[in-house]
Image (cartoon, rainbow, N blue to C red; front, side):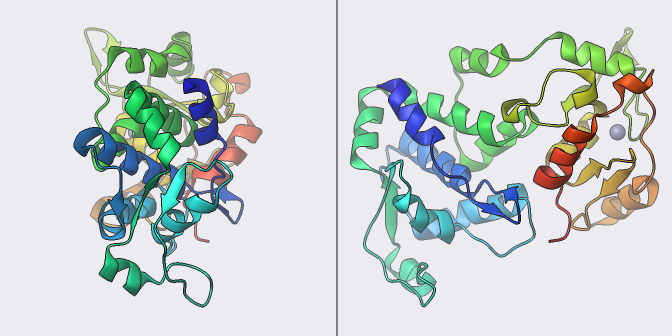
Length: 292
Ligand SMILES: [Zn+2]
């Protein structure tokens, strides 16, 4: 039963545009899970979803577009998985939601009846489904931010264990050592009592997308550059040069661009440790927020 439900959530077709996967549906589903867990709300209104999920689509979606939560709010109900329900609604000329009508009426949607029944019977499934959605769609460094943004708190040792289970604990050591325990972008290398702090091993291709725990799929990055990398604000191109997204703004955006755009990352100990082309290409295409 639990496996069946997870499989149905896994089968949801993730929206793709210009070859980039876009996590509109996972973000809406995580918000709906949060409302169900924290408020026992079995339905969410379109206006609430717009307030919370549309900004997240802008942050975590891969492109600079005006796509909002209206898309998954309505289209999820057509998915083969049959996990979503939406009240009757008026369509515009292109067959999408009529936004004015949806807002005025506070159009309702939510999980389908049998999905709600499964969650009622086994509330732990809410956490399991949420972890699964996070694992499959977002880099681990973003999980906590997303959970807080949708107001979903897992707080369960078992869930933590699920998140950690699949990682190779040696990955961090191998990647950091390969880059002399420095951020390969800015050379940050503070140590306390001999141990590197606020320095992390980033996966170039996400673990859940099939990226291996191997040095050519890793970069040694300070926490700031790691998060920017996972958000697609920066990437590394096939010539090992840093690229800064044109969506990055602000004084610090200017600084990031001036200091690092088109500058080579620091070299690892040997050539075999350099990022592999296939993983770089995946990050360039799937995560980096270049202009579309
Ligand atoms: Zn750095």
